Image (cartoon, rainbow, N blue to C red):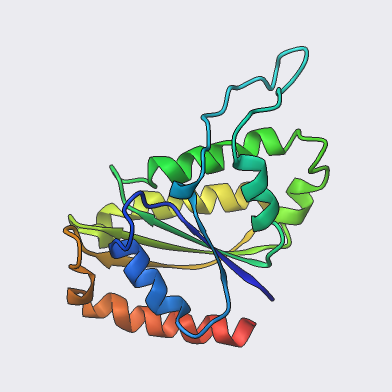
Length: 182
């Protein structure tokens, strides 16, 4: 089983990345930092005569890399009770991939995957982050992707993550689970 971490933060070495790095320490993973790529918003052409048109950005390159793996870890800060805009742009484009002839088995392939979510927020994230977790649950349910679990951390300013000892204990637990799966 191979693992890919999809980082949705726009901040380099931010709190979400710090917590995620604790989870994947000593585990072989591929890391994809969405902030390093150009992902354009979806233009909804599902019902147009020609369907979706090719988009000149990095999305297809990213989804090809992601789909090579068995386990997905979505790491995102909690922005306005949801995922980062960068992560949302990436996931929104899945609607296009569902109809892309280059990915004819996208939905069936997604059903073979396992997924985890790591999210960090500053204002009571253990409660206010739950809508984000529910959103991911609905996304994974749509594809029959196995939602294996999530980790929420509390931090706001850069470097605050280590103050959330509960999250670091949970990160160790999740790391042990992942080690058993690979």
